[in-house]
Amino acid sequence: MKVDTYILKRKLKAGICRIPYYICGLLPIKRNKIVFSAFEGGGYCCNPKYIAEELINREKDANDFTKYDMYWLVNDMTKEFPPQIKKRKNNLWNRAYHLSTASIWIDNARKNYGTRKRKKQYYILTWHGPIGFKPVGRLRGNLFSRIAEIVSKADAKNVDALLSNSDWCTNIWENAFWDEPIKKTGSPRCDVLFNERDKKRAEIRKKYNLSSDTKIVMCAPTFRGGSQSKERKVFADIGTIEFSRLRHALEEKFGGTWVVFVRLHPQLALRGISYNNTKDGVIDVTTIDDMYELLAATDAFVSDYSSAAFDASYMKIPVFLYVDDLDDYVADRGKLTWNIADIPFSMAKNNDELENNILRFDNKEYIKRLDELFSSIKLLEDGKASKRIADYIDSKLNL
Image (cartoon, one colour):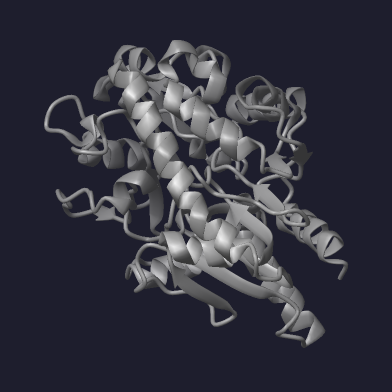
């Protein structure tokens, strides 16, 4: 009964939220207007950012800065955006007005329940983790709540293009979601990993006052149930990564001087949660909006169940998994989409295992297994995803 009452309240609230959309729906749709959002009001990041960057470059190439009329819905109005993008506070009336009058919507997460789309509008859902470990949507089984299903189905009806980067991903989307049209384009956020590595390596080291030969390992755990109200288990005092030990193992295996970039999930960053135990050689980069500029500059990657582990592997850098709570995570989230033993990344449940995995790392075997994996799933990641999506946008805008 409590669940039914909650669902009823959410449906009533969604109905009320539609009222501004009906009012704003009386206004004309602007042909070249595009509205972006990421992580429910986050900053300039992830797939939407790199699509926007491609559109900005096309304006520059055409010497026409009126070609696209671009807006970004953001919670924190102090966030910085390129001058070609107008930021607007992410509230109900702004969402209703700007979404109702735009030709194109671009988002990496589900829209708010109650969002209303009009005819002759196009909604591109990029998502935020194509190849990953976490089950999503229907793949979560009974762990996927009734209200989450209702909200997801309502959003799915509006989607015109759900992005994929592989046949494996397409198959997952078909089984996890609700018949959204799937478009295999690659991941826009990964373009920077192919096209600007040298540039970002230099920029990031300069930004953090690191020498040009300093090596960086990024530790980027994923989002968990319970994380909304407290810090992640992986950064508690017990059962955590020992960062000094991690650095020393990397230095012993690969040589050079290493620093650790700690990056918490964007959902935690939105709630003001950060890693506050920064020590020498450990830098908290959680508050940086765009993780992928940082990732392009890294030399190794450590995570648990984050899809970013696969993204990092496209650069053929070493990836290590640290899963000290595997059983608890599966119980909370659902069965993982991969058997971890079947992928090229070594898995550790404690610091001893993580150290051993680093010291025993075989790069030749690792690259071989990566190539076999990418071939088997028919991966499409080549640094051109943003161009493909921009072409799709231009076709819909008749440009």
